[in-house]
Amino acid sequence: MKILVTGGAGFIGSAVVRLAVSRGHRVVNLDALTYAACLENVAPVADSPLYAFEHADIRDRAALDRIFAAHRPDAVMHLAAESHVDRSIDGPGDFVETNITGTYNMLEAARAFWTREGRPAGFRFHHISTDEVFGSLPADPAVKFTEDTPYDPRSPYSASKAASDHLVRAWHETYGLPVVLTNCSNNYGPYHFPEKLIPVVILNALAGKPLPVYGTGANIRDWLYVEDHADALLLVVEKGALGRSYNIGGENERTNLDLVKALCAILDRKRPKAAGSYADQITFVTDRPGHDARYAIDPGRIREELGWRPSVTVEEGLERTVQWYLDNEVWWRPLLARKGVGERLGVKA
Ligand SMILES: NC(=O)c1ccc[n+]([C@@H]2O[C@H](COP(=O)([O-])OP(=O)(O)OC[C@H]3O[C@@H](n4cnc5c(N)ncnc54)[C@H](O)[C@@H]3O)[C@@H](O)[C@H]2O)c1
Image (cartoon, rainbow, N blue to C red; front, side):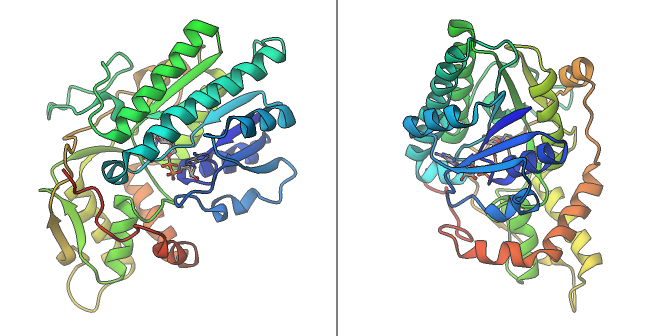
């Protein structure tokens, strides 16, 4: 299959690009190379004859038309987005432009191409979204997000992703565009940009800096190893039912505080401090405005209909992730100089 992946120089998109090429798919990586991008993320496949890169912005419709015409993809996997909730609080405009208008441009460019090609039945537009569109769950562990949970986004980021999900469904219902959607829980793993919780904790710990925990650290997230997410996404684009959405999650709920403590315990073993534990660096900071209390995914549909299961436990995934950051300073060190990295963002209320 020839897949046009948007956002393929980011964290999850690059995992998709690497996995797709390793499975023999042809991949065109379309990315604007924003502050969150890193072409080193796709270095393992960059020389493959199966891989091509297009430096383009999804806000630029003419560029999208040119890329569709030049590459004639069998499928689109649309991941390009502004993705950091804290940045969405400080500057929601970029989120509206890229996540909503950009997705609209992608849908229109895909629809024009698909129509011109004679509406091939096998064509797929796969929109990659987040569980954050469903809002915040109560503490009761029996209550989880299903595909039928009503949308209730509460941050500019999640609202922009919810809007994009609605557009994708509308293009299916109205124009017949063959779409599939996925909503996934929090990802972690190699190449995670060092402004997100897990890399911030690992890198601040190593630098002897405070490990910032928002509020009391009681917020619960459901963690999935990024390579398991990429595997689920390729399964959905190949086998997902038309017009259907699939929730993807690892069933690994942790409070933020427990997660940070688990990372400290791994670091204490792998890179012991001269004295004390990395957990001594934990510092409670002002909470994020509108911080959702709990996310948890019920992955029953993708498990039962498509047979997907995550392959990595959270314990194993965190070990691998910490080891990857210890081994790859050459990747993360230059990223610390990018705008906003290392600063506390998103405290405006
Ligand atoms: N990170 C998570 O835990 C998570 C969970 C569920 C869903 N998602 C979704 O998965 C997708 C990828 O997330 P991520 O964490 O890899 O994000 P990321 O921020 O690491 O990467 C985003 C990529 O999109 C590119 N991009 C941004 N604006 C663009 C534009 N206007 N035109 C072209 N390219 C542009 C960036 O350059 C970057 O390479 C997003 O759609 C996000 O909403 C993320």
